[in-house]
Length: 72
Image (cartoon, rainbow, N blue to C red; front, side, top):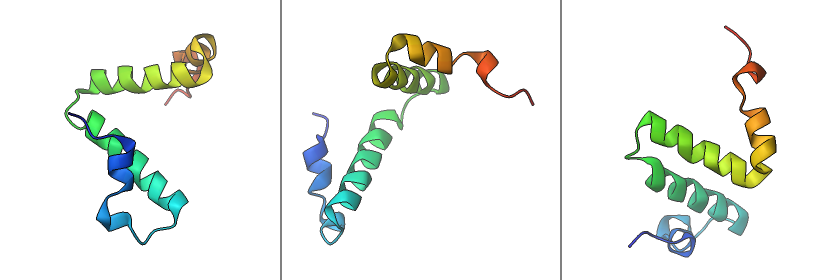
């Protein structure tokens, strides 16, 4: 069973951290555990999906379009 955010928040190594910092550490570890065994393509899909949910599908597609990135 995957760990929940509360599981990460209650990690003993973060017990002395301020609550906001403890939450940042917990979120970072949760994301790491979710993506650590993914391929590059799976990670890209994961983060693209996260962006789409956060921004709305139309805005995310416009922001992630290849023509929005600087050419090398």
